[in-house]
Amino acid sequence: MNCAEQLVEMFGSQADVARAFQLDRAVVHNWVKTGYVPVRWAGEVERITQGRINAVDILNEASAKNPVRVKSRPNDAPFGISPENQTMTQYAPAKRITSFHPPQRTLMGPGPTEIHPRVLTTMSQPAIGYLDPVFVEMMEELKSLLRYAYQTKNALTFPLSGPGSVGMEFCFVNMVAPGDKVVVCQNGVFGGRMLENVVRAGGTPIVVEDKWGEPVDPQKVEDALKKNKGASVLAFVHAETSTGAQSDAKELTRIAHQHGALVIVDAVTSLAGTPVKVDEWDIDAIYSASQKCLSCTPGLSPVSFSERVVERVKKRKDKIHSWFLDMNLLLGYWNAGARTYHHTAPTNSLFALHEALLLIREEGLENSWARHRRHHVALKAGLEAMGLKFLVQEEYQLPQMNAVYCAEGVDEAQVRSRLLSEFGLEIGAGLGPLKGKIWRFGLMGYSCRPDNVMLCLSALGSVLDDMGYPVHVGDAESAAHGAYAQMHATDAQRKKRAA
Ligand SMILES: Cc1ncc(COP(=O)(O)O)c(C=O)c1O
Image (cartoon, rainbow, N blue to C red; front, side, top):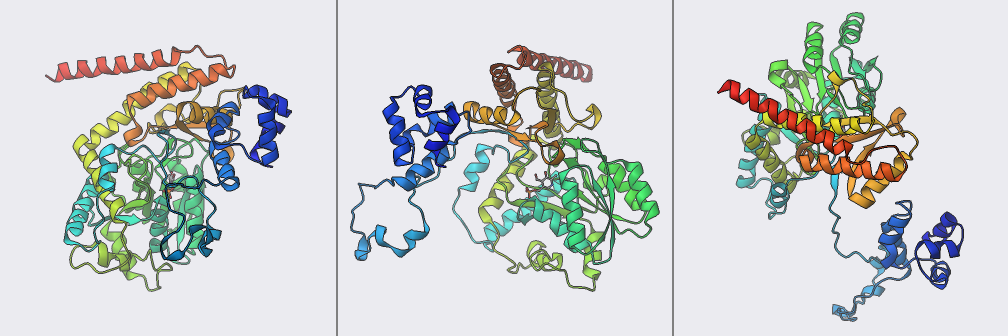
């Protein structure tokens, strides 16, 4: 069904569509007859259908049916090849968009986050070779900035080329040999992915399950390790993005070591948002992702490994199953000394990560953690003033990932869609068993700002009010202002006492 027909079905008749758009009925009749809605109506269709038909669908359909001819270009292309007749054009549908310019969005979902202008500028600098001495020097600095972010002296600390999932896979393919027993904790989506990795690496998983929305229970982990002597690895997610729950990485690592197991820690959402102290907590292997609290472009996965892990991987008798992710092969490129080609590094993304880490260094990690907490407290005050309840108990709540039960009696998908189309604000939906039940409000990295908190509360209040949910518009904002004021007062008192 094309978009014109969908509109008729949605509104009941061509006359009803014409009424909704304040148009003559003949115009709508023409849309149906030609099989497309002209592109100038794209935004209006998305607005009037409240996102049920996207502007981009109108755009694509109109472009395919009625391609634009760029009149300023001569019809005769060089060498007598007319663009319309090129054999290759059959593979590319006619496009109206000749250069992509994404809209400005406020990103308050589970990631990616907004990117600081300084990082965007750095990313658009000229490309250089990945063995260029200037690039190599920048990478050395990048590694030390990552050591700062992870609070570690681990020599093997570097960004993998690939998203967080690559970091996860890197840990498992290198640290789990076929037959190895691995205790893997599951309290959300990403623990489930870890489990999948154990199985694919040929390991024998021992699953410790906790309810979604709760942290990993250290007692259950201890029991599993006691029961399964010789388990070589304990794997868990520090900050479960699918629920907003934080587990006690320090305690879980202590228990693992007591039973002779190494740990693999997923710090994708925690790094730079809440404390991650690799050396102090004695973590063996850890991975994160560039697009969460580091606020960089997606596609890089910072990892760090202790000497224990490097030694264990070096001693493996079998060949690591993945060529690209073989730690021993990558050491030649990322370790200091003469660099050899391994793969073509994503240079401009790495410039961006360097700049994003510099911003964190300038702010100071502790200040970054405190900023995430401060804006979480204000957002929470506002959401609760609207009557929304948090999924996670207060002491385990992640400041950077706020999951609340959806308001009852409203279509939750429509709320998200209206926030996006009317306010340019993206929030996250629930995953797995929490699909349709929760909203996830991210406050990560550069997106974690007071203007975003206030926009989010007022946009949500306005949409909910419009949809008939009983909220008093303005209550949420005033609760957030109150929370900020109280925090300022407490800070001022603390400073006065310290002086
Ligand atoms: C906790 C956690 N682990 C792993 C991943 C996978 O990261 P990516 O999407 O960058 O591959 C995510 C992504 O959201 C995550 O939140």
